[in-house]
Figure 1 (cartoon, rainbow, N blue to C red):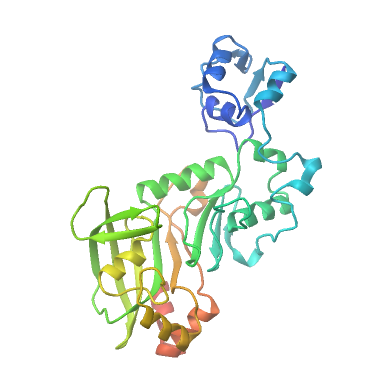
Figure 2 (cartoon, rainbow, N blue to C red; figure 1 turned 90 degrees about the vertical axis):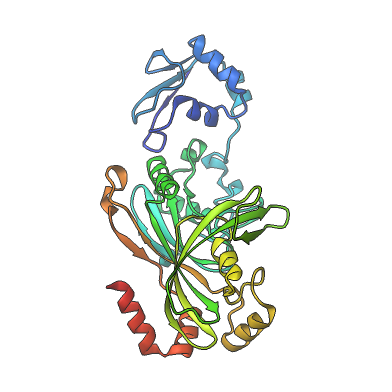
Length: 347
């Protein structure tokens, strides 16, 4: 018999969810059969699998060692095999200056352009893996905890978009962040430099259809088969005859929404190779030396909440612009004007 004690990172989920992670090679039917036959119990009592686990609960698994090993495949190596771990393989850890906020439940990170939010393939080194390495190095989590819960970013940014990533480092934190993103109670704002002149605020609605094969989206003014409604709010902060600095609020959050929507409106993001203008991008790169799109997730505002995230209820967090972005804006409008914009944004 094996007994597992539920920790804070496992609490809050159904018993079956934890069993699916622990016995990750077992068919669901097998798990339910073991529950019915009382080969798996919760706190020494019969369980049906729908119970919501609490910290300190005890799960008893009455399986032979051979059967347990057959259905349990380590998600990550055990501590004595850390040299084989994807989080301890000599790859870079998260730089502390990338952390905007950290508590027992969440981290708020400032992702640089040019790195993935989460890995797309086994060999990728994303900021998500860097975060987990950092947590292991700091002792905030232990390697064996990764068998049942892995800290992860809850929102994604394109590789060449910089700015705020929200990560759950406990199950409760991950669930709360996911809920806020899903019900749109957490406000997300971006800064972008767009082509052309925009002088008035705009609340734009359109429809977006994604082509997964091309990893590209198409925006239209009316719904078409397979499209999703999108809504994006724009507020011009500064402009000249060629460029406009915009604050963008995402109401909906679809893939490539800001970039594709602005291009559809005739004001593509500068440096955007996928939806922008080749000629405008060449001039932008020549003039400012920026090789990627000028798009930065710079501000989030949390709703009023209770529970595990109550310490940051109603708080706002900002990710400063990288030096190359700020330098470009100062070249366009002067250091004093950019400072005034920042002060106005903070008021």
